[in-house]
Image (cartoon, rainbow, N blue to C red; front, side, top):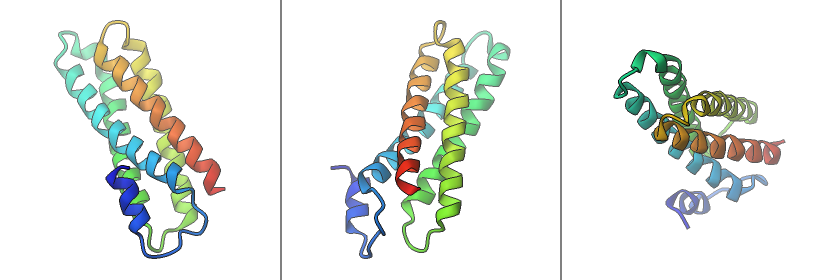
Length: 135
């Protein structure tokens, strides 16, 4: 069991039917994706043809920020607004899809882009699964 899941399980109130497994997996995927996207952007900056990777860097950094924010908001269980939560998770899913698509364009040339695309796909899927349990 992760610390994320342990903290959710330690929450003193009823979560109103939220699938805690999907919630903890989504939080974990968000934080992992944020770190991976940040690392990919940094690795892109280290490449010789950095100008060719400008869109990838931008997409990485946008995705990292959105994923980190989503992970933080999902970690707050008291007084959450279901509409805001759904919108944020949907935005995260969209950002992960865009970043995964962009990184896949460079994956044959850059291992960091392949790794990032995989993390984005995992987070995109975790967001999609959480959304089905929030509806």
